[in-house]
Length: 139
Image (cartoon, rainbow, N blue to C red; front, top):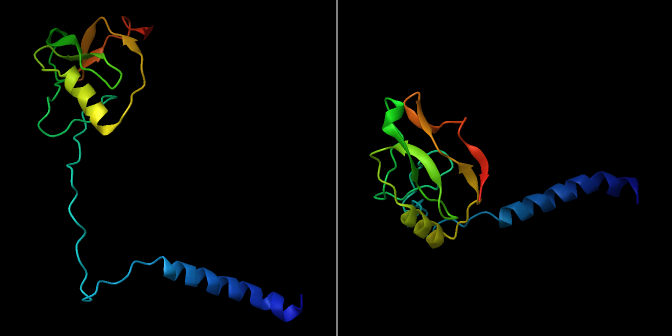
């Protein structure tokens, strides 16, 4: 290659890159006025915290709040694999079948297996598994 073509090569490659990039740009609206994007068709799920799947608005909300360890109990909160024992407020509703139905509807899967939770304690206002009683893995 000649020296002139070696000097022009970076400029030509830059021009080709810019043309390719311009081809990917979205076309302007026909009337020249910018439009808002369409609204999302489904609401964003609320996070339940921890490793539990998100819940849709209106679904059962699991309560993890406590003042003393006596406020806590081991309940099946469910996950995408099936049963999922967790420490929750003793008066909290749970809906393991609803969690599984939501997982099936959205095509999600979960990591199966969990710690065998046998006791709970109140830690900083939240029901937590008593680590001395948890055994891995439960089958």
